[in-house]
Length: 208
Ligand SMILES: Cc1cc2nc3c(=O)[nH]c(=O)nc-3n(C[C@H](O)[C@H](O)[C@H](O)COP(=O)(O)O)c2cc1C
Image 1 (cartoon, rainbow, N blue to C red):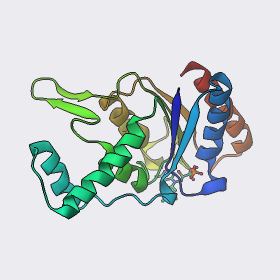
Image 2 (image 1 turned 90 degrees about the vertical axis):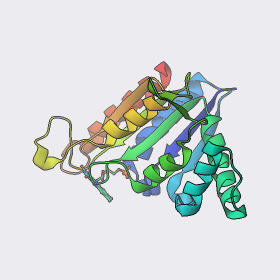
Image 3 (image 1 turned 120 degrees about the horizontal axis):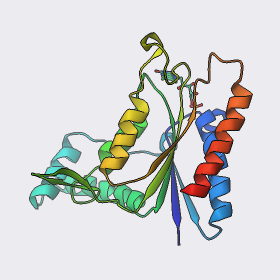
Image 4 (image 1 turned 45 degrees about the horizontal axis):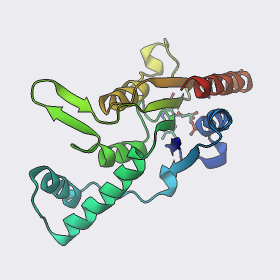
């Protein structure tokens, strides 16, 4: 059975523009794949395990095959649970606003948890990073208030899609289909732009 995981990186709930566009993707995807299951991971409504000293020690234990403290074992189990939820999916949908030229910190936190050697990537001394999530595809809905592709640098630079697309491909997810709604703030055509982005999202759902 096909599984779609929607990772919501915006905390704005029903007001979210990226989530509104993503909904159009979900509706079209479920039309194309009536048997598919949808898992929604709303990062702002989820308590992510901290990536602090204990989690870093737990990760090193896993790499070296050693047994650590009880706290480290519990931390590693929380990491494994989230990685499993992530890797169980066949397809991904991300709704991602630009925050200070990059991605929201909640999404970076999620990435720092699920990017694990041996689980989502392998590091080869000669060939570098090799993604383990091959065969999976993603659609990412990007929004930004001011930034728009081709704008002067005074209006922002895109470390949002540059970073997230790179990360997804590094862990093996390919293709990464982008749907953009930007800018959302200083524009007189938001309603029309939203309609166009929803249409782009529906098309992406048919091709993914
Ligand atoms: C903390 C924060 C930082 C933001 N930083 C940027 C930014 O660097 N560039 C930009 O164009 N918009 C920025 N925005 C605006 C959002 O990207 C924009 O409002 C977007 O449409 C929000 O999408 P959403 O409705 O899905 O949350 C920021 C918004 C917030 C809340």
